[in-house]
Every structure is written in C-alpha cells, then in structure tokens.
Length: 514
Image 1 (cartoon, rainbow, N blue to C red):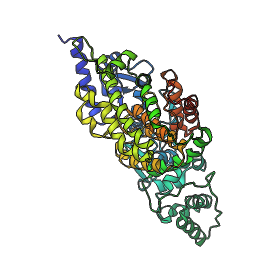
Image 2 (image 1 turned 120 degrees about the vertical axis):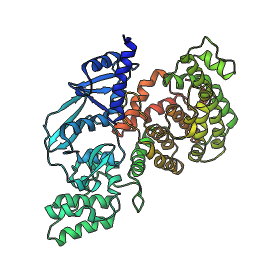
Image 3 (image 1 turned 180 degrees about the vertical axis):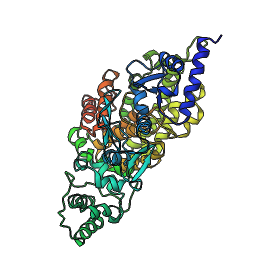
Image 4 (image 1 turned 135 degrees about the vertical axis):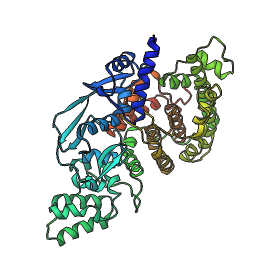
C-alpha cells in the first residue's frame, strides 16, 4: 500500500504534466478529485475561483501574494482562452502598456471578447478581470505577447482613450515612436472619417517631434475632404529627444521615465555638498560602517545574521562544522559574500572619489560586485557556478509586488541604456535616486539585486559628495512601499524623500552610523 508521501508524489507528477504544457492555470477537470484535494491540502495548489486553481509552494506564508503575481499574466491568458477561444483581445490601453514593456499587474484587466459577459471576475489580492462584450480587432490588427492577445501598436493608438496619453505618457510616447509612416495608422482613420482621433494623433506625433508622420496625417485627411483640428493629448512637452529612427519601445520607455521623474527628484532631494576632498577620511568612515551596513542590508533581504556572525566572517573566523544546518550556512555565505563585495565596492569608490564618472565606474564594476557577492555560495555548493555568468536568463519576481521586472531578453537592451543615462546625468541627486530605482526596477540578476542596488546608490552618493547611507531594516516597509509606488504609479517622490531623510541626518558626519 502506497504511503502518504508516495501518493503525494503521484499527484505532483500529474500536476507537473499540466505545467509542462505551458499552462499557469489548473482547472478542476484537469485533475481527479483525489489528486486535487491532496495537492490543495499539501499547499501545492491554491484556489483562485470555483473550478480554477493556481500552482503554488507549501513553504510560502499564509497571505503571500507572490505566487499570484508570478502567474498572473499566464493565468489570465489560460482563463480567457478557455472561456472565449480565440475571440478575445486585451484592451488597447493594456496592449500599449505591454508593447512598451510595462508588465505591472493591473488592479483590473479589461479584455474585449465577442461573447463577453460584462461581469467582473474577482481574482486574488483585490485584482479583477472584466471580459467586455465588444468587437475584437481583426487578426491583422492583433499580435501575441507571451500568450496574450493584444492590439498591434498602430491599431491600439487609433483605439486608445485620450486619457491614456496623460496617465501613461512614457508608454504612449514609446509606442508612438515605433510608427515610421502615417500609412500604418491612416487606413481606419480615412475609412471611418475619424477626424477627432486623427487630430489627436497628429498632435501626439508632433509632441514627440515626428513631424513628417504628423503632417502626413493632416494632409491625407484633408485630401479626403475631412476637416481636422490638431490637438496635443499630452500634458507637457517632451523633455528628451527620442532617436530619429525607431528604437526598442522598452528602451524608449526607460529614457522617457527617467526624464519624467528627474525634476521631482531634484526638487525633493538634498543639494550636493560638493566634491569630497578628504578621501582617506571618507573611505575610513565607510569601512567603519561595514558591520552595521551588512546587518541591515542582509536583514532587509531576509537573511538571519547577527553582528557576531558578520564580525567572525569579516575576520575569517567562521568555518562550517557538521552541526551547522543549511539555513545557517546560507546566512554565513551571504555574510561572507557581502564582505567580499563590500571590499570590491570600495575599490570602485576610490575611482569615483578620484574624479571618474560614477556611471561609467558602476557600468564597468557592478559585475565584479555581483560575482564577489555570490562566490562563497558557489564554493559551498549552495549556488550553481552558472549563476555567476551574468544577467539572468529567465524571469524573476519581487515578493508581494505587482511590479513584474522585464524579460531576460529585454535586459540586454535596458542595461546599456541605463548606464548610458547614468553616465550622461549631470545632476548628482538624479543619479542617486534614479540610479538606485531603475536598477532594482530592471532587476537584472536572479538574486542580490537589492544589495547591489544599495551598493550602487552609495557609489553614486559618493560621486555627489553625500555620505554613505544605510537603509535600516526597521524601515524596510517604508522603503519597499516607496519602491512599489515608483514602479506601479510612476511617483518617485516618496522614494526621493525617504532616501533624502537618511542622507540628511548624516550630511555633516559622513562616518556616523544610523
């Protein structure tokens, strides 16, 4: 007779076959009642709604939202396919967000469905899905993004609401920049005589300095006998010149987001104290903060480290023995990696304090910080050696965050653009806040992004003459919420003020410990 463990193993094999099929959602009909109840009881399944389930992990705490946000887009695609076959498409607004690389989990996802119910479907963690009964765009006006049916950029721009240009300006401009010829969007405007939309798009293209596209829209509509009034749907002028030829939309979005946030950072951060002249004293003060810096930074990431462990690791006095459990070894290897990375960051600090461009130094050295951070864990067999290869090769998710970092393929485009922005930025405050935020927003590594992001922040602080700061674990909630607001709502002010409050208490005492 099979044991309970053997029975659970059988159920997990059935579940794994479903997942290998590329599905995120599990329906009741996919499993027998016995398998379903066994997996639910063991914590490997979570009920989303009647008849629909999500794969999860039994080690997650009750109320943990990560599994839902990890699987959100795949679950919605599976649900819509099951309910409406191929007769659905996400709204033009959501389509443009995804086309621009914004994968934030929305509070409400709207899908146009030919047989839509117009009834809100309640989903976990206060998210909802609304299948609206509406015409679905022609196949030629659709494309697929990770299994999701979305409008093409041209079709979405014609169909999107006017408010989108103001509420999501970076994404709107980034997708507009992909249109190289008015012929891509003119057919429906001419056929339907959509003069208001034509005038709005002409104004939008003029706003991003695509004058030829704007002029061709106006001339074509007038040639067809339509009166057209140009109106700019954006609330302000473009503060950065987009490349004359189309760039990747997620790269354009990054540049536009940087410029949109830059002014708020400058208005809410501390003025630069000026270049640090006593470099030796500054470096000594940083060295003195190591133990408490390591304690707070590692604790923020969930490691259980004591001051004693940190000091023993720093002095090389910690060695594993047969009585040490896996968790304690992981904590110790994390502390050892932090010490090695901290030393490497100080080498980078010397370059910046010597007058080198902070963005350039960060670009050249951050890979070394990452390798030092995880080298002890590789040596101990906790982390695979392949994980030191560089930027992540798969998806990564932030616990309990609706922000979904960009795909691994997008990182190869975003990181060079990020460091270019960082190197070109001439305001020290903007470098500090946006450098830290954008790095953790992209989340280029499978692990260690928060620790490296704080190392980067402090390197940039030194470049502006600011003191080395420590984010206290006691203020972790405030810190994470500020990052979330910046990622989800595009509001950088809370994070700016949070970091400014830490730097303000130290501006006259660079060696003081929080």
